[in-house]
Length: 139
Image (cartoon, rainbow, N blue to C red):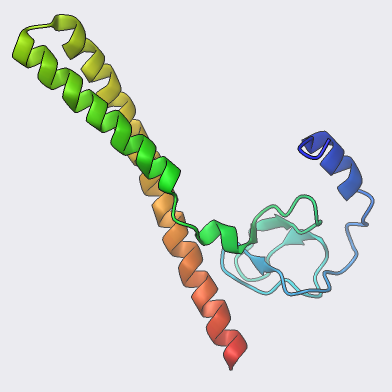
């Protein structure tokens, strides 16, 4: 029941969409403070749609977004290492199957690298936004 998205949506619709956010909640697109805005709407700074209802929190900046994407990087390294091992074994021992599977893992490795690169870019963006938020709150 805790992980059921349909149940979360049902519970979250109990809050009226026009009710105002009472705490400091920031847009994930630009870091704008959404306090006193409706729970559902668009950021006035960057125009990104958000949903700040407690169980949904879509396009809302959280500290977890700034964590390094280690699982994506690990998956990319694992797939590339396996591809290199299989391609090397295929070339060294003349095994066409090892070479073929190595090429397949190489394609997956490239795709995983792309996903990891995107997640690292988002992590850097969110960390920059969080630093800007912290600096503006200190002033």
